[in-house]
Length: 374
Figure 1 (tube, rainbow, N blue to C red):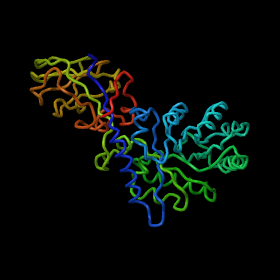
Figure 2 (figure 1 turned 90 degrees about the vertical axis):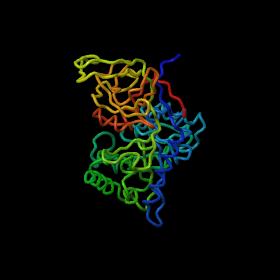
Figure 3 (figure 1 turned 180 degrees about the vertical axis):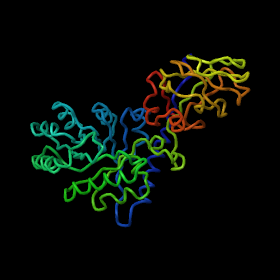
Figure 4 (figure 1 turned 90 degrees about the horizontal axis):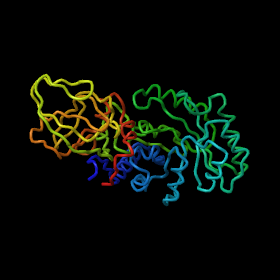
């Protein structure tokens, strides 16, 4: 019998979340302004949920965005006929042939990419977004060089190498700093003013901020790029996914594989990080950091056993973690455990307890954990 841990993935929840984001955008748009199109972001194997499940769950998305060229090719070969966007663009001249063959759009953020395109030939013009660095200082052309880069892209468009040419940036603080986000948007609007093409600036947090998408480029075609929210987690510290009508798409669950009673003063796990203050019943769960659960999770991290909320105790080890069974006196070997997801703590609650974000936990679930569509 295999180890009892598994990640149950709800394709229905993925579809629900996409629809919820679409409805929120519909509420935000002004009369006469078209609802932005949605790039459903499926990078990192769809945030750990699996590309094929994402293809099913996001079947009604306007387009799919990812990082890996092989993932984009897989989407095409699996039957996806809509737009595909590589968020970091391409890396080698040989990649252009694949972009051409599979009709894959790209983000262009360096002169080196433009150089490679200028020395290439294609059968089908490649659609592109030219990325502007508006302050995050990660990817994108500097403000002073953007107009030149955009002009080079337009020349490639005239030569039939590029098709549609649009404008893009990425927000650094859309989840918690409206002033910083507004400053980045001001830079974007100023630098790209008068340049044609569609616009893409909104990540999950900006997409979910009421009224924000409606203020961006009201007279241009707009594409938003929601990611984490489509998987039922929140980009905000002060607003839960459930409050926004989103459903968890991943439930990480396991079972108790050991139950024992320890006396006051006894300790639990590596490093004896937890000491019992009274006689208590504890359980051991088949889940550890080799499964992707964070090793640094502290005492008190929420967990659900037999439908009852309790807490982690002691240090997470490679294959196991311990829980306080005081609130669950009838728990036994084989009792179900929800690490996060439906009927358990949200992934954001667990992440907050661990001093990280839900993105990291979802992406970190290890390949050895079976995924099961639910």
